[in-house]
Structure formats: C-alpha cells, structure tokens
Amino acid sequence: MEASIFLDFRLPNAATWFYFSLFLTVALFFQFNRLLSVRNLDLLMLFLLVPGFLILREVADLEAAVRESGDPGGDLARRAGRERTLGYLWLLAGSLFWFLRAILDSVLVRRPPLATNLNTPGLAWLGIALFVGLTAVATRPTPDQANQQPVGKKSATIDQVQDTATAVVQQAQDTNGGHASREAVRFWAERSLAMLGHASVLIGLLMIGWRHFGDITTGVAAAALYTLLPYTAYNVGQFHHVLPTAFLVWAIFCYRRPTLAGWLLGLAVGCGVFPALLFPLWFGFFSRRGAMRFGFAFLTASAVSIGVTALVLWLAGPTGRGAVEALNLAYWKPWTPPTTESVWSGTHWAYRLPLFVLFVGFVVSTTIWPTRKNLSHLVAQSAAILIGVQFWHADHGGLYVLWYLPLVLLMVLRPNLTAAEPPPIAPGSVLTRLAGAAWRRVRPGAATEKPLAV
Image 1 (cartoon, helix red, strand yellow):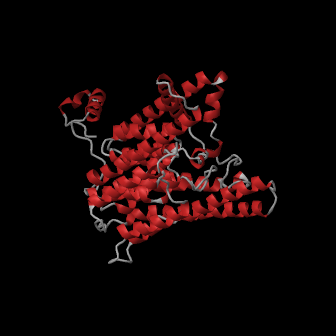
Image 2 (image 1 turned 90 degrees about the horizontal axis):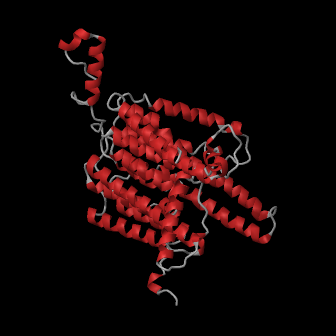
C-alpha cells in the first residue's frame, strides 16, 4: 500500500533552499531603513559559504557520473577535480571573512537593539514549523538520505552512542515482534539523535537570548535563523557535528557557573576533538574568577567521557586495537600527509604546518587578550578558534559550519554585553576559606589579621 500524498513531504533541492532561505532571511531580519549597517552585512554574509557547499554537491554528482561511465581519466573526472579545488577554496575564503569578523567583534561595543520585521510569536511559529519540516525530512528513509555519507570521521564516543541507541531500538523491536534490518534501525537512531542535538541547540540559543541578552526576541530570532540557514538543512543528519556544539552552547549559557561550564565543555570534548581547543580561551576568560574550578571540572569530565569510551573499545576490540585505531586521529596532525578529502589533498604536509603554527599562536593570544573579557569576547573568540581550525584541518576542512554556526548567530545578534562578565568569587566562598587557612598555617600569628582575599 502506497503512502498518502499528504505524507510525501520533501525539502527543496540544495540550490532552491539557498535562494528560499536568503529571500526569507532578508524579509524577516534586514533593516531597510538602515541599509549601511554592520548587522545587514552580517545577515547577507551568513550565506557566503553556501556556494562552496553547492559546488561540492555538484562534484559528488560528477564523480557518480564518472563511476557510471568507467572513464576515470576523462573530461568529467578532470572537471570534478577542478571544481573540488574551487569548492574548498571558496569555503576557506568565506571562513577567512568570518574569522576576521569574529576578531573585529571585540571592538564593536555599541550594538543597536535587534528589531525584526516579524513579531516574536510569528518568529517562534516559523522556527517550530521549519524544525518540524527538517525532522520529517531527516527521518524519512529515502535512498538519497540513507546512502548519504557522513562528512568527516565520527569520534569513538559518537560511534558508541549510536551503536547503543541502535541496539536498544533493535531489541525493543524484536521484543514486540517487529522485523527491521539493522541498517534501517541505525538510520533511525542516527537521525533521531541528530534532531535531539538540533533541538538542544535551539533551546540553548533561546535561553541565552532570554537570560543573558535580556531579550527573548533575540533568542527566538537566533533559533529561527538556525533552522532557516542552508547549513542546517544540508547537514541535518550529521549527528557527530551537532552533539559537541550542543554541549558548547549550553556551556555558554552557564558561563556564570564555572564548574558547570567546565563539565559541559569537557563532555563536548568527549564527543569531538575540536572543543578541547577552546580550553585556553575559557580558562583565561574565568581567570581569577573561577578558573581553577572550571579547569578541574573540564579535566574531570574529559577524562571520564574519554576514559569510558576507551575502556569500552579496549574490551570490544581485539587486544585493544579498537581503542588504538579510534585515537589515531591523523587528520588532526598537521605534520602527517593528508589522506582524506580537503583542499590539502595531494599536497605536502609542510604547506599546512605554518598555518597550524599561526593558529596555535592565535589560541595562546586569546588567553591574555583582551585582559578583561566579557561574554561577547567569549562567544566571538570561541567562534574564531573553531573557524581557524578549518584552514589546516585535513578532513573536509571548511565544511564543519555547524561547529560554530550557533556562535556566529549569537555574535551577529548580540546586544551590548560589557556588563556580562564572569562572576567574582564571593568573600565567603570555599576557595577563600581554604586560602585563608593555608595562609594562617604559614603565618601562625595571622589569625588576628584581616582574612586573605582571593
């Protein structure tokens, strides 16, 4: 029996979604009475990387045609090679713009209040409707969706989560007398987990706008933009992209609680490598206002999540080979020849190493500049670090837009955040009492002196 025509719901193709989302974004957020404004430029530049995605999609079609023709050295193959290079260069050029824009954001203190062309309930309805549509398409097991290959390698933790979810669903179906292949169950588990990750990001953006930006309309606008931009639709099923980002968004929401922020960022590291690069910036952000609590929570959460995964792989793999292979992240090592698809394919590793050295220097500089950070610096510099990874990452570098897309949206839509600083340590906190006790042990006569302030 064929499905009802009312359930035959499909997203438009990649190019149509690009034009549709661009026109709708301009209609909803563009300030027509202030054409020459930074926010209007930011809204248009949000679509700067989309042509690179479209070019790489055309490359995939060309490669499929090459495989069917059986002529790997023909005109189609040469055209695919040229367009692949062009696509990745376009992505890196767009990434360079947003990298510079994130650095510039540190000096953009005055920000006008966000004024949308649609009221808050209308924006909320649009975001919910788009999310429902994305969910319907993501969980529809069409041949194209089922055969879509993941962009980049999944981390060992992500694989374990997906395998566990697949096993649970498979066992439930077997218990209820259902019969479904493991591939179908794995597809449903992966897409369901991906949509849960996207939902967590949306709720996190809403809460940040409401609690920290002081304007729920800004949070609703950020969430609506997240569902509207083509990058979310193009990578809607990439669970390994969105899960670490969800933890990162909620760590930003908890920026006034260093311990909780450290746990969330540490769990993000357990799901992917890239959040670990943010540790120096966040440690410098808290500085004397909870840096030790943040660092201890971060290291504990990272050790627990990675340790549990490594233990499972050690027990599952023969003689621990599973853990060794999972931790052999060659595409994160700029001193090794690239073996995966990127703009660096076929080049010597020495050309990539200087960019990595510059990136490390930039990460170190974020720990001390600016000396007094607020939430706007934390968001913008975190986005800049994740964008900077794209330039030297050897596995599809430039395509990992979901890593930093929520941070860019917060950066574009944020108000003035000069007062949003990490909380000071209260005079009666645990650290203060411990420091005072240690000081009195060193100087026994200090019991009658003024307690040491931390």
